[in-house]
Image (cartoon, rainbow, N blue to C red; front, side, top):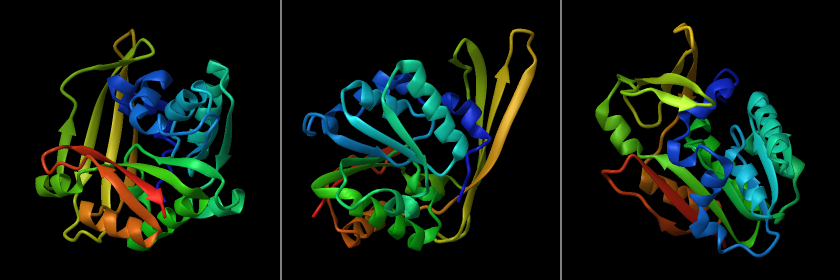
Length: 251
């Protein structure tokens, strides 16, 4: 599985301006979090640098944040301390989640940031979704975000260079994506992501990581959710949009 240990140090440059703080990140999911009971138990199982987990904790939820990357878990713990948020952090990949938590522990599970496509193939996605499903109480919901892989594959292998500087923590950077699109859907695809920071002396520091991913079609994801015991309640999928969100409930 992809580590993200290098990109963990610069991941904030990959987060959109609209979600650049924990409160803003949590607010982006207000349409689903308003469905939760008071003091809800929530799992962010692809927590990244912790913006969503810390934002949810700020709303009074009991939050657990997990990630396969030890560096991401560390950054989440640091952000939690910075904001004075109560977030439990655990390093675990999706298949390890049932080793750490009892079945039906959570009211909602988040898997956002286009994370699921890093699971290895259809088998890996099924295992990840089954783990999330097991940890949800009956009627609880999983919230997923995904790239529109139909669009990504249609554009083919390419180099995407950001057309503007992105400012985070008083520093500017340019973000570059290099896409290696495999011939078949089920084959391993690769994305190299580079963050080129420009410091005050105009020196450029580049951090990059080559990530593996296994995309799936929107319709296939719906089938895999059902097989994991989850019923799709809503989807924002649009053939022309870059990303979409799926909300599915535990049957």
